[in-house]
Length: 568
Image (cartoon, rainbow, N blue to C red; front, side):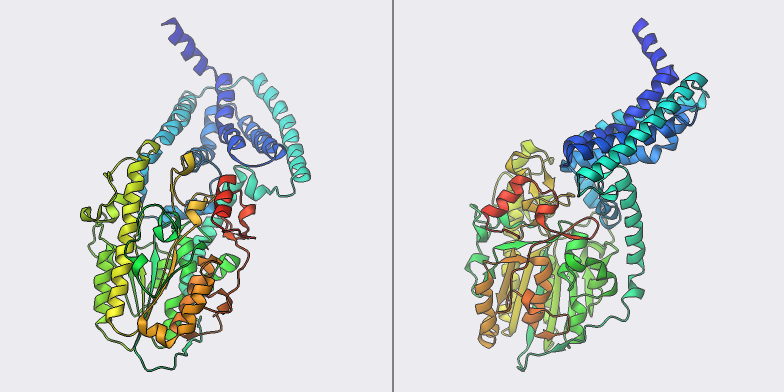
């Protein structure tokens, strides 16, 4: 009982709360010192300068609880930051984290919730009691003594001078240090402003792109019927495809198909769906991503060239460029939206039914884009029970101890994709027309690889498993007879380093015989003009950065080297 009274007395002491609140505010900065790959001078600045600013603000009022609540936005950032670090292990809250809140549907978010429970518990224990103590201080109008406040204001002024000096030292000794990118929480505030700016630009897309044209025309001279299909996969990493040397038979059907070329060394320029897919569907790449607000997608190019176009998706609306580009088609269907049920979870098989109906139109020139749900978590829900080949695969929590089950389910989803693509190819072959199919995935996935606790994708700093993706080109018998040089070029290029983000659109134009000023055959993997380019990654501020300039882990770099993917 005496101990309880002593504790109660300690927490009622406003001077103790003043220091406690200061410590809680600076916790994220201290944690970031251990997670971020920055030199000591930068880490020192990232603690001293924010601490001095918090110190100044906290010393402006005699009611420290009131000031603590005024700083609530920074407590929210701190909570968000701790959850992010728990999930991905490093990096500050990115612009894409905020954009994901409006482009990820609720069912996807709920799938991740169980994996975040420990982080949420930490956040609740750190911030909720402090906020309650601050609220009690406000309600009971408790005040700090005048002498205490005057003393702390003097100390805060000294602290701010030291903080500014530490900032100057960081700029002096670290040439790569940037306030907007490296100083927490200034970088978070900057990223929020960018997120609002990009949201406004996206909402104005219809106006800024309305006059865009590809000036496209068809250049294939033959009279034969033509059908081209672009398939965009989801969360499928090349590391688990037996076509690329994986030790499990995940591609039993595709490995036997004639006319199929699998490109081995392919990296995406983004590990997030809302950036990667628009790059695949347009001439935009990491080098010029911000021009996306003025351009349209590959469907418009084929429409201008005289093709009947269709877009079929097994994903929900994300109110951004995937929707915009998809709705350019003559026919489009987002099948998850059809039932009006948030829990509706159709198989990718449903897309093949739509393809069959579209092919039945028997148009002379057809272009179809499919956006699958592929291998998105929860993996066990991506394929029927009858397709469970690797066992056990029963649903489990996303924890390291269940890695074997998760990998089994993930590999089953890859086998299902193999079956899906094989049946699609069979449908096209049965049309007895000039046909070609192009496939890649938007990004890959982490599944607790290499004794690390990384899981899923979209981490601010990508891993090897998140950016190494499969990339396939298939050509029908008739197409190979009419355009044999394209198959030879594909075979000649399949061991070269390729950016899926830069080459997918360009390869589709060449396969379909679509000519436009936006076509660049040096990026098409079926062209003799194809040339390897220095590899880049689209960072959070929409800047193209080399992989050795984004803080990628040493182990991931070594994996790229082991796989022969060495981006200069």
